[in-house]
Image (cartoon, rainbow, N blue to C red; front, side):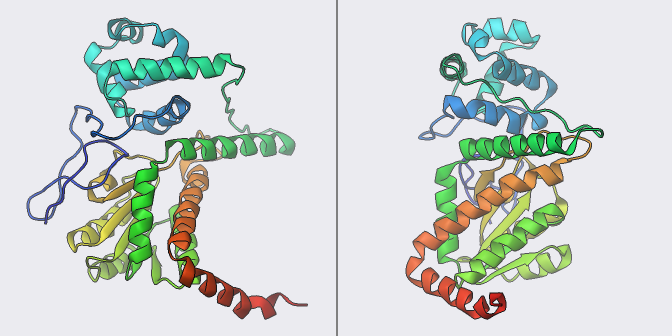
Length: 328
């Protein structure tokens, strides 16, 4: 079974055509060109995009991305050759980095850098995230966590592809059945989404057991939806049931912090999340949950809007059914 794939990380739908199963690599060494009609990220979203994608870049591409994020004004004044020399890379690496960040070419990236520099010079200082130390007073822990959470939510909102979000909402609103896969912290997010969908009268199941997830995915068909939640984009226990659902014709969605990860090759729609900077006391599995929950809430509200005539009465009925449990 084959489907088209839009060749850009984190944006667009479809998949790489494969040998019978619809599977394809989609992860060659060359960065894909943004698809026609897809607008490049706004200047305000550039820093968020860098933070999201840097961990999955090659070291040379990381140097380019970090340079443009740390000094947008300085880099905006450089030619592609100048930025390559500054970062100790090649012109090809600079162009590949620009494309991975969502820009058709380096010229478009320079324009975004100029816009970002203008915003910063207008008085809005860039956010600074600091690690939590073992001996930090609890007041400092609260302040640092609050800062990281706010930055994570802002980054996720700035980088979320609303076209893909809308397409996923459309599929969910019309789905006969929705299966959601997640393990560990992502499993908690999967449960949150299914509970929300159930309360508005939709059939949804969360699967954290990989064997049960696969056996249920086999039953999915066209008109069903399968959602995989994985920050790393490489969690095998989540990718396998998504692949099975994909092969059986279900519409598939990936909620991931790595839009160029392995999970994306089986996703019709990729919704990219951000995460606070990792620390010894707060690994990615914990910090990623905030952005995942934001995406889940966006999906739920979108579906509730599309199905309002049935969702509102169902939600009201669920409140009434539980009201006596909250009375004193």
